[in-house]
Length: 284
Image (cartoon, rainbow, N blue to C red):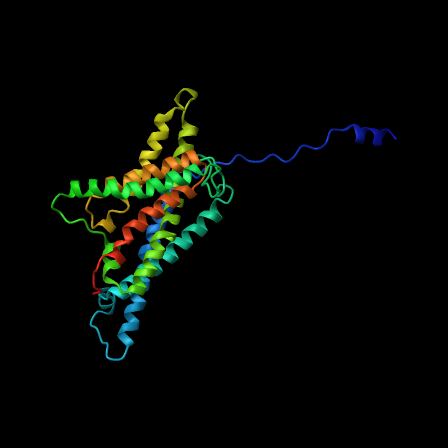
């Protein structure tokens, strides 16, 4: 009887303690970026090699260098690029979700990646304005900085040279999967790691906007810099890309979601690839 009374009087058991959610470390975030571009190199070389072997065994085709012959064909080069982006981005997104499942849908920018809708629709309107405004203002800035020098981009050249089906496939990936994986890496994993590093290393007196601005600038600068190979190592377009990176970081920080940044990035890319279809440029 006393045992039963004691059991009824005992407080209910406490729920199991939950571990705090922390963003990835900065080293982990940088390692993810390196892995993504290494995947592109390995997959791209492998796809080009297979394409070269296929051309070498085709009737009437006996190139001295199958790999070089394959990549000289604009349609084959476009197909290789599309396959490389599809596989490298898919593997990277899978790894991010597998490695940090608890951070995947966390809205707070210094804890997670924000794969959750924003509660305020105004941020999607802001994303639309950013996606349209950056190509206009940034394009003028790029041409002013470039002066008489040509402003080239590898993927744009492929889009102009490829046949229509290749253009459509490459444009679809550039507007959808490209922004998704890049925003996941830069405004998801990297930006959250920089903000969390700021949270951990700062004192109460040092939690102002200066360190948040530093995280925004660092992530935007790295985002712009990794595009240098695609720009044929010309720096003229870097300020334009950095502006896009800053705007997307602001959207991620204040909207509580990664989707407005993905939308702004997608609109920016859509305006860039529109010339593949609007300009009269015969396929090579």
